[in-house]
Image (cartoon, rainbow, N blue to C red):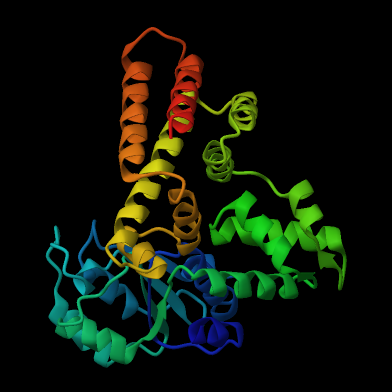
Length: 339
């Protein structure tokens, strides 16, 4: 990403627009900007943030036009600039004033517009202007192939190498959140040593598990008809003090995803299109797609109904929550055997 490369090389622009669903890249840009653009002693005094859902843009522009305190420059962050999107605004913003500033920004201020939204309203004059004048960082979630490359690159930054089997295992265990992956890669690289290789065995041994990744494994065992293994994973989660209601919710979410992926695949959607449509990581879609082959649409609808009934029982009956999930597993096993 050009913006990140520029920041690493201490090359700055007066205006930035950072947006997209992958928070990791935005946080990385923020850290690099503050580290390289501001004097260490005065950095905190010259970082100011405004939330556009709470205050008008006028205040941020006025701050950007005010000289920095002691240091050479200041950084003004503008959070949630929804006026670049088609969303309805709750606060009135003086966009004429903003247009004027974008055409003639202060030489001593770096003004950063930062948001999690995925799309801009390209029809708007103000959106066209910010894209023309600013350094734009579109923080997209990487696709599977890009994610593999990112992990290899991150490992190299930490002085290690990592093979494909280890990458696959890392994603299975740690999930797809880049901030979590970055932390795990740093730990694994330290274990491997300078120039060492991060192996699949090391990943299995050292990587912290997530609830979501354990649920993926649990569902895989159900799909394979290995109910005893599914129970083992479930009891492990209980020993880790995971709440049965939370476990049930994540299982339900995975089966809903499997159903949606099956439906959209039937309509001719590719995996990347499905990921974009459902706003989930492409790797999750790949897993769900593989799992979907073990079920018919009727069976998936039945499973989702079972999960809804289990959720209702947990919230309304006096039955032990742990047993409700056990009963769900047994009912599911009966259905699988009847296929």
